[in-house]
Image (cartoon, rainbow over all chains, first blue to last red; front, side):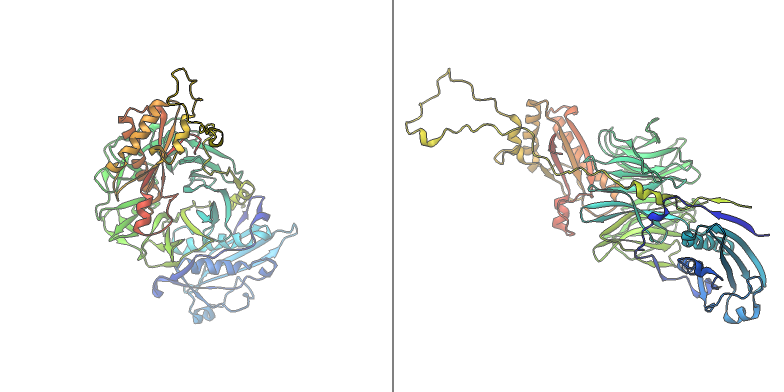
Length: 423
Length: 186
């Protein structure tokens, strides 16, 4: 029995910029024998859409680094419910995706897909999705998410979005784009710096730090309406907002009582509470997904290191021990891996630490990495770095096996934040 | 079965892309320049009186804040530079900070914003905290010299507004800094 789905979208879709900027592209995929050979046939009737659905699914799955595309030829299947098993097996496909698209009477479109295990000769998954024609690209992401999850057991991130800051000349733009950097739009622009964007767990709001008042002040912006409000503008600096997993409060860094210290605050600015007292800098808070721990950067032992503290009390525990400079902790969604930036002989590099074995792994060979942010399925880390003196974004899988070419924009791009899964 | 799937809601945000960017150039100090006090040389061929009489009218009230811009005054010096990884005010800058302390004690309506900065290496937020440390160091020194807390705010620009946009040691040294700005200048 096929499940039917309806793809919704905001009403402002006509405002999607026609020009797609450079996209994140795979530089090094996972090892050949670890990638799933998949054939993605043309979807019958998909030429009614501005962008063929099967193209989107192919590029999404290839970009994940987890699939090897098997040429499926220029024709859709004659009958998507009856694949020629031996023919697909001969082409080397373990998996086959076939589908069709049709226009409905109301002008919208409907896509049907069927995912087959060619080796076992069985259908693995199928679904019907209806959507407005101009959402063809999103429909492709939606199907790719289902295929990815069916075959790999973790959610796909193709429908997610990223935020980042782009600096062009004197202008700073808080940008929101598709997960691969496509179709960026500006949520906020200013002539003063913007840093530390952070998505609310429901993906509807962004907290960030703006210097428009000649000092760092924390704002909260509702993405759909553009409404923005001040969360924290205390005497001194206000920065580093981090959302609690329930989306009800923020951990923030204030200097109103001296050096940078971590506080908890409700979204409307009420209920301010200092979490700890330390004699040095405490900053860059990050909640664990279960809401029990707060990871942060502190120089209480001299140079900056990563610590964690239980939110219900107790002393802070040091987490990073290697090297003299470790900053910007970000916890994987499953809480098992910590990503941060470590300084190694003058190079600032993206590093991951397995929190059970404490094993660390430097994931890059660049010099100026910053701002790691996990994909919400925990498989990839997006980060800022510098190539040729320009700020760019890049991504790498948590095991370091899949690498991406940098994503460039006009000017410098930095401060990435990966949005939540779209349910 | 139909399942509602919210997607790409944020596209509406374009509507909202608001710019709140007033012109933010450091405004000149609002006070008018004091009236010229030098007498017109052409009409004063006669020797000036040897000494002003005790009963001479007091000079026109001078704007005390004008001194802040006088290049001959230590008060026009606003930058305090720091060594790498250091947050101690170096002795070289003590006379400048002392001059500002005297000025602020004399002019208790004067308010300053101390903006700390850091060089570009490392994370934005950690550098923000380092810049704050530098601003606090200047503020602490002024406080020890008797300036009231209410007259000062220490904030950080981190590495976001480098004075020198270069990427070498000379640029970094110039960006490890705290700046003193008087109200009206920020």
